[in-house]
Length: 201
Figure 1 (spheres, one colour):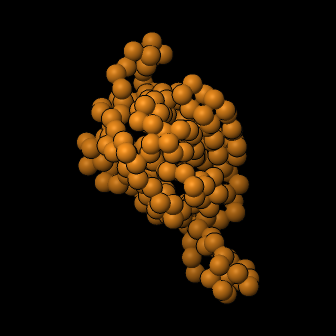
Figure 2 (tube, rainbow, N blue to C red; figure 1 turned 90 degrees about the vertical axis):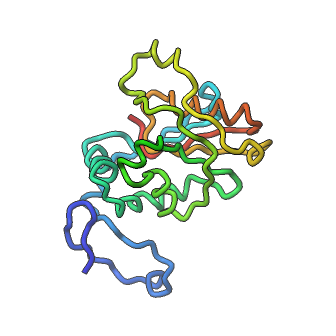
């Protein structure tokens, strides 16, 4: 019998015609754990260089614990917890671009968490951005963020000319990271740049 990935409580799936045909989504966390996450469904239009930003959940205690276990304790199985929600927000006609990790952080953490969330949701994506530094936005003052050098450089400008691009990241804190990414993509010719984040801090 399967166990909840978060609390190890036994999961009880009720058989349905969808599950018998292999069409049903697998349950990987229990109902009690699922209820602890607080929906946000925040949608904002025309945020600086971003045409639209959508955030799915708020940053509460349950989400903090989830992120800690997923990112810092490197529990890669948790990448699939929000796969259905992420898949539902990413249209097939857009170019999906994850916010990358810096190479040094990727070595330390062993996997790129945003990439793994997209893989679990079966969402095709391409790496168009390369992180130029290891700065943490939440540790900087507003004045420091306004005077920062570009956080990203473009890898392949030809693939997004006149296309709709959606940036994906785990958490929206100050918005600086997303704005820097959107600026680079717009300068490369993207006709529209949106962002989807799992969490709004």
